[in-house]
Image 1 (cartoon, helix red, strand yellow):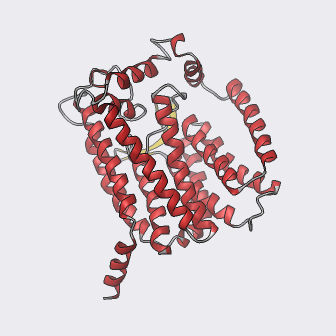
Image 2 (cartoon, one colour):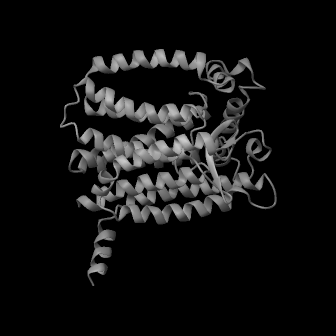
Image 3 (cartoon, one colour):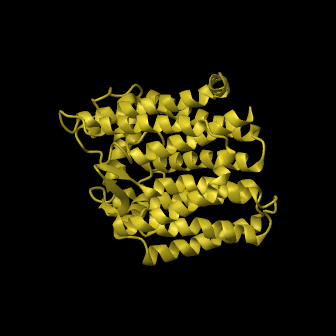
Length: 366
């Protein structure tokens, strides 16, 4: 009877609106991935794998949601250490896919440690910020939080995975801004960023990463080479018009003019096949998701739970901006997936675990 009462209370406190928003985004993603699959062969390739990952992700989501948010505070250091070990190990034992050594592959399944690093850093920074007793005006806070962030970023850049590194850096900087860190500290950090960017350009970036950045500045410099992907993406979105060409009838995606349509350019598939209406519905769903997470954070009690939810919010927001910005030519294409929409088991599972953390704050506080 006691267990039944706990289950009843859990589902009564559960934020069904938040969960429904994500399911709607997932549904659009599955439809787009199914459409891409139709263009490859008679047998589905991506769709069944994504569906399996979704089932596992939802199971983990409900398990995580049922935990008290204080559990994540107790495992913050363990999660961070695990991320370090995984990122170091993947450089030695990982599989190289499209020039990036960032995946473990076991029994036909792939796992990307960089995705777990996003989860680990959210939990760890929320814990670290809550330990500072609101003394965010000290250099010690900037340096220590930056040190822990840059350890993960450095290992990810070695893969190399510029997109995931930018997501982690963005999370750290925006959390510093939200804590009220003094402006002179942020200006200094910006100066360091410029210096590190120049160093990375000269000594760390691969040729294809440099080409992506140069193409962002001038897509027409190599329309059939480095600029091809962005050019085809913009054509795909523009050809969708108001109502789209219909699922499975997008010329750019179906005829394979759009590379990596199931991951980097999934938004372009939505824009082409569902049109302006479909793209706007998707953007509205993302806006409502971010708004709902902000509402949860503003209603939470205690710094740890507040910054925990804000971390989840920022991880989603940064990835949305980078992915869609790349698809429409406003930002360089860096391989960052679109949350809950792009193909990728690791991404889907980690995004649902992050969502479960936000739900655990809701259930624990009400």
